[in-house]
Image (tube, rainbow, N blue to C red):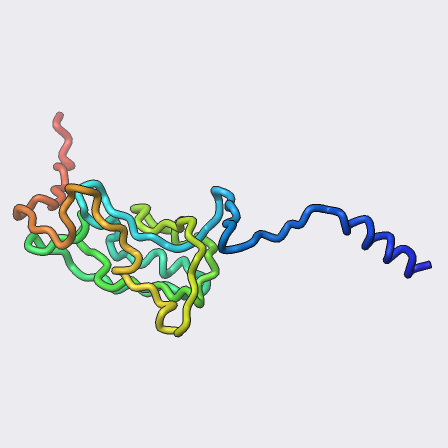
Length: 164
């Protein structure tokens, strides 16, 4: 009796349409919420959004992100803040694509895109460095580092005295 039920199930599904996608000739469309390869974003003026705070590395449950910060100067400005990410690395073999780094970033510098075609022939190829992650500047915007006027990005603290 069980054999007959098994054959009946097989025959029932034999005429169904195939769900296999013939990759790479046919690429499956992913949902908008899909989290793929990481990107480091820039402002319209070409400066990097990453300020080297390492909150993304602290939020990463897989310990896949490593950030080394350095100080900005007026001669070499990378970001609008006091610091920038001198070194930014993501080990894609450790990353679980959870998006916690994206949620933790105060400047929305790190974002997970929709790219899914990542293959590695060597473990070293799986470590994405800053040059691989950072978006190119928009057309007409200068790349980093930029030279700015002294004091252009200083933040003055307003007087806390009561005017009355």
